[in-house]
Structure formats: structure tokens, C-alpha cells
Image 1 (cartoon, protein in one colour):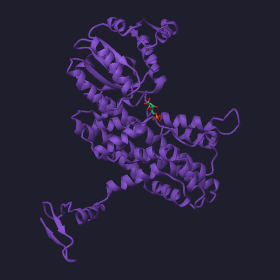
Image 2 (spheres, rainbow, N blue to C red):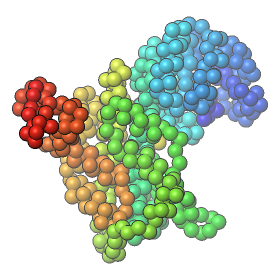
Image 3 (cartoon, rainbow, N blue to C red):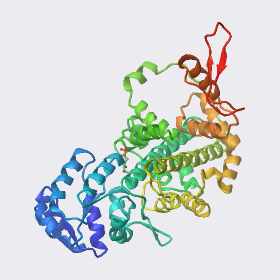
Image 4 (cartoon, rainbow, N blue to C red):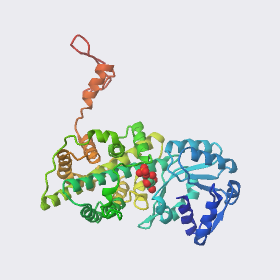
Length: 465
Ligand code: 6PG
């Protein structure tokens, strides 16, 4: 990915000094792609630093964690105040905050930067979420904006906020990516098991959906994966792949962080747990074959009706999942003192990144119209769409439950919606339970103050303030 990023800069007329721990790799890059622009190969860190114009702008692309610390420690002593180290890897935002504070004390800008779009994106135009100081962005921004994806002439790169804000928002991007992928996978499973469609037929359904409001990179590639036939067996590719999902950890980070922030990203959590559950082979073997629901065969007309019902459920769940992501960003901004322009997050996710989707343009517009929007559902058009989706969304979850088909992310999104729209929640009862066994106190609806009830008072509880 670092190599492709360097090539992208070079193709945009930026002279790039390149260094890899292995001198052979540095030479190979220049030999293979030297014709694309100006590369200055450097064999040692000293040679690399000496090749940079001042203030120096170093971009490091190494594994998150100890490897990043090691590289930072290798280069920082060679730098001068005002120089910048950009970490373009998928680092944990808390590490970025720590590194930023440590290097700030030495006069060096540490700029944690989330870059989405994989290797191809890095070469042809990624989405770039930049953290660090405003000052560093004034020198780095034009470079990032030049190499990023563009949508409607606007770059998909922006300064998100100080210190770890860029990496935080990239982490939430990945959390949303997990939710979106799981929602799509559940929709596929329903179309396969309930509507009885083949993978090729479902590929056609996704291609159609991709033309509408669900239009997105993830829907597009889903159609391609479903249409793919395994050359070795002639079977649909999706049927020969082991059904245990991997993860590198950014979804898990999102959920762990959400727990700390008390931010209810339930669709991301369910998506992350669904990956974990898929890999629990012993547990799955123990449960396999236990009774579930029934799957009556649908007629062709019923299957078509069911398909449009699933589209509504998928769309409504997707809006809720994205809304959860935005809520988490708002919660983090309040916690860490970041001033994040929520509309610009949507703007830079419209292109280059994995979750790029046409409806991000509407999210951008919703925040542009109202900077203080608390939830996407506070915007008229989204609210109307969710209203329209009510019956099919609920029917989809009900059909899945009746037939014993797991739809954890779609159900979680619906439950989240129902939680937030409820007049009263059973949380009141939880407060009573907590007060009973732990004297944890509660607040009342009829007057201010903190109360405790003496539950054990001989069967006649007494309340005190
Ligand atoms: C991106 C991707 C990228 C990667 C993740 C997810 O934005 O370019 O999110 O960061 O695909 O690492 O990978 P896992 O599914 O393995 O966690």
C-alpha cells in the first residue's frame, strides 16, 4: 500500500523519496515504476531524511502497534522541530494520541491519517482522513487532496480534527464497513433461503439494487462475488468458501471503544460478533441440527414481493447503522475535544473508500443543511423513508425468526430504532433492580433529586431522598 501511495504522489508530480528496510524493495520500486514520476531512492534512514525538503514530511506505512513505535523512534531523532511524521496505517487512535503528545513535546508534528480504499485506492485515489495539528494540515492538505479520490470535483480528503481524530474516524469507517457487509450478507442469506434464489439470481438482484438508493461499492462487489463460478469445481464461488469470517481487528476496536464511550453501535457489534461466531467451529458443531424454524417454499410472485421487502429492510438497517457511526463520532468529539465537521466526513467517504455509496451524498447534504443534526432520522427524507420501511422491515425480521435464519445486524438495527423511538424504556425497571440489590439510587420522573428505597424494610419498602 505504501508503494502505491508513493506512486500516486509521483504521478501527481510530487518528487518522492522512498525508503524500505529492504534496500532491494526500494530499488525494485524505482526500477519498475521510475517512469511514472520522480523517485529518490534512499538506502538508509539518514539518507532518506536528508533527501526531504523542509519542513520534512515523512509518511510511514507499517504495521500498527510496536512496529510503528519502532519506526517512529528510528526517525524522530533525525528530525527537527516543525517536521511531520504521517502515520498512514490503520493505527489505534489511542496510540496515535499517545505518539502525537510525545512528539509534540519534541516539536514534531505526528499526523495520524486514516487511508481507505486498499491497495488499488492508494494508487488511484483513496479517501483520506487526516488528524494532527491544523498547522501540519496547511502543509500536508494540498498533497493529500491532490492524490485523493474526487467526487463532483471535490477531494475525498480532509482534516478531521486534532491528534487521533483521523484514525478514530477511519476506525469508525471500518466499523460501519463491518455492519454494512453483514447487513448485505444477511440480505443474501434471506434471498437464498427464503426466496429460494440461486447465487447467480441474487447477483442480478444486487445489480438492480446497485442502480438505486442502495448503490454502493459493497453492493457492486457483492454482485460480482455472487456471480463468480469456482473454476475448479464449477460451483458458485460462494458455496466453496469456508463460512468462517476473518478480521484484522478494526471492527473489534470500534466496538471496544464504543463500550468506553457508551455509544450504542449495535449493528457494528452484531456484525463483529457474527464474524466471531462463524469461526466457533466446535460450538457450531455442538448446535448443528438443533430445531429451528420452518422454510416453506415461496411462489415466484411471493419471492419477488419478499425481495422488495428485503430491500426495504436492508436500506432502513443501513441508515440506522450509519447513524450509529455518526453518533459515535459525535460522542468521541465531545470526549476528546475534537471539532469534527460531520458533513465533511460524509463528503470524503463518497469516493475512494470501501463504504463509498450514493446515499453518503445525502448524508453530506443533511449535515450541510443542519450542522447540529443529532441523528440522520432528524432529516425529513430519511425519516420518511424509514417510515415507509416500517412494515417490510418488521416483516423481514419476523420471517427470519419464523424460519430460523439469523439476521443479527438487521434485527439489531430495528431494535435500536425501536429503542430510540420509545416513549418509555424498561430501563426504569433496571434502575429499580439496581437500587434493590446495590442501593445504586435512581432519579424520578415527578421531581428532581436522587432517591433510594429501603427495599428490605420488612416487606414494606420505604423511599428516602
Ligand atoms: C479500507 C479497509 C481496510 C481493510 C480493513 C478491514 O478502508 O481500505 O477498511 O482498512 O479492508 O483492514 O479488514 P478486516 O475485515 O480484515 O478487519
